[in-house]
Amino acid sequence: RPARSPRQPPLTPLRLAIALLLQYPGLAQAAGQAPDDWRRLDSPGIPLLAAILDAIATRPDLSAGALMERWRDTPEAPHLARLSDPGLVRHIPPDGVEPEFLGALAILGAEARSRDQAALLNRLSPSQWSEEDKRRLRAGLADRPEGPDQADQASPEA
Image (cartoon, rainbow, N blue to C red):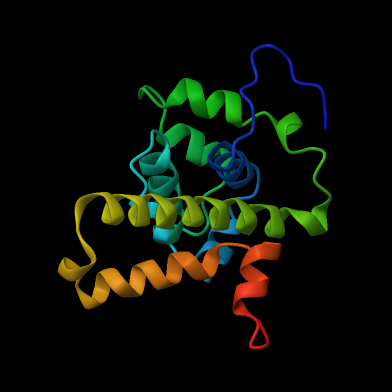
């Protein structure tokens, strides 16, 4: 991993997605092909990521500079200024930019589904689950990687 200066925030999946969009606004097209369940996350920065993607969707010709200008004099401007540093994503090879971006969105989506599942399990008993609740729970369970214990239980011979 590249060394960070004290001013650079750690690159969480959310920050990575924003940093990549600021360097490569064309990635917004790839986001349209990925699930957008990450938008349900109630985390700081999610509305900004959504707004950046929406701005690019409205005006696909927006440059990185135009994106920065759009948020000038807003509370988000200092965060965007830090995330617009090309050094943050310099270690990603050109052919890895889109997979990194989509991977960050996938991680955020998995986090959203996990939080939804935890909230559902904590608030309702199974007899109160709607069909949509059950579908979301099944989808969340399908996202989990299988460990050795789960693989044994899923085997027809077990």
